[in-house]
Amino acid sequence: MTSHDDLLLTLDQKVAPGHTALVVVDVQNDFVAEGGFFDQAGGDVATIQTMIPSLLRLIEHARRAGVLVVFIRAIYDPQDHSGPMIERNRRRCLEIPRCITGSWGAEFYKVEPAPDEPIVIKHRYSAFMGTGLDVLLKQRGIRSLLMTGVATDVCVESTTRDGYFLDYYVTAVADCCGAAREDYHRQALDRLERDFGGVTTSAQVIETWERLRARPPA
Image (cartoon, rainbow, N blue to C red; front, side, top):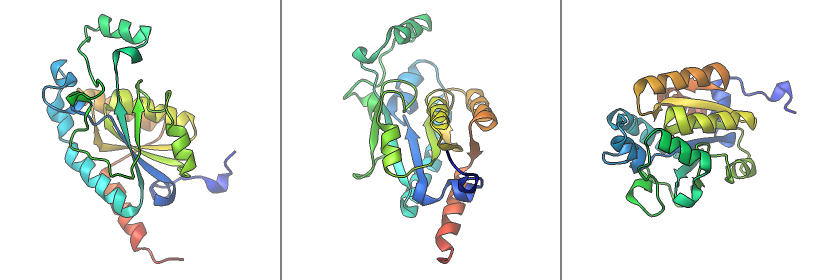
C-alpha cells in the first residue's frame, strides 16, 4: 500500500521525470492520415492532425527532461481478432482492414521513436491488455503516466482506465490527443478527469519540466 506521505498530488509531482512516462498511443497512418482507416470510415482526421505539432513538441521536451517515452503500436492482423471483435466490426460495417503488420497503415504518423525508446505492440484497445507494458513501466520505476495519442475515447481512454486500475497516476494531455469526432474527444476527457485522473495541456507540462530543471538542487 502507498503511504499518504508518498502521494502524487500536484502536477509538479505527477510529471517529475524520475517516475513519469509519456505514453504515445496509436499515432499511426490508419488513424491519422488521409486515406487511412479512420478517413475511409468517415472520421475527422483533419481535426486529429491538428494535435500533432503539440505532440511532437511534447515528445521533444520529454526527451530533454529525461522522461521515458513509450510508443504504442496497434496491430490488428486477422489472427489477432477475437469473436467479439469480428462481431463488432460486422455490426458496425467496419470490416476495412487496419493496422496490418508491415502495412503503410500500421506505420507511425510523423512521430518517430528514438532507438532506445520502447515500442509496445497491442492487439486490443488497451495497451495493457496482453502486453508487457505494465512490467516495462514497473521495471523503470514509473508511477505516473502522461497519456497522448489516438483515439481519445477508445484506445487512449482504455489504456488510461487500465493504468488507473493498475495504480498508476494518469494524466491526459488534452491537446496531444485526438478522436474521430471533436465531441467524442471532449466527452472522453470529461470522463477521464471525473473518474480516473487529471487532464492538462502540453504547455502546462512543458512549463513544469522547465521550472523543475531550473530549480537548484536541494
